[in-house]
Length: 297
Image (cartoon, rainbow, N blue to C red):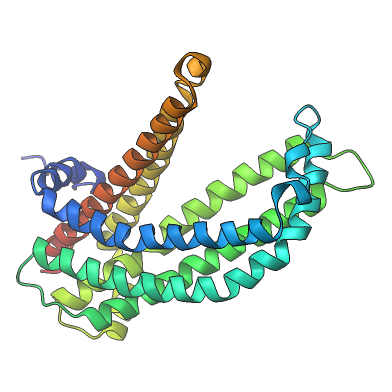
């Protein structure tokens, strides 16, 4: 008999999607903990933005007189406005980012623990260790975001200068290349932190031991984890594109529909993306769990 081909990570995702879809409580838990953090965070951001605009209105910063016909003039106007808002923004971020990071690691650790326990009742609920692992995940994510921001700043400094005509084509190409590159890099390096909570709970390890063990899972298991991470990243990009298409679809009929209808469509597109993204996060967890059972159980 001919040996069957090895199962690819993506081949099992359809089955995991159906399994998660038949258990809506899992997606509801994922949505609940993310929105439990996201809604208050957005409210605080809105309040802080309103306070900054009360101190420095849009008219005073020149944002109400942008020249839409000349992008280079508009870019200079935006740069001047940014110089005015930057001190106020940094003063707010200095306290908002640490508070938001602390809230996120706590809420996400508790939420992820509840989902894993509901997914497999045998697993123990260890919130403190899960919170610690989520903190490490957030630090790595912040490092990659900082690297992306510094890279984009370098591209802007080398392609958009005051002494010559800006190289818009070169700037756009580098921005797209670096953004996709960092996106792929995140999918390639984040899988150990994604599988570490499962290793900790399933193998009854400490948080530190699970981080070390997640790097020694073997070539076959690691390949499956990277493959699922990359596929989920592509799915996330597809969801973003789909949400953008849904948002842009009614624009040609904006005069007939009115601004309220457009705002409603944009809100629906945003909610659709958030719900679908949360659902696929649970699918990825289920895929990781099944491959652990295949290779480690």
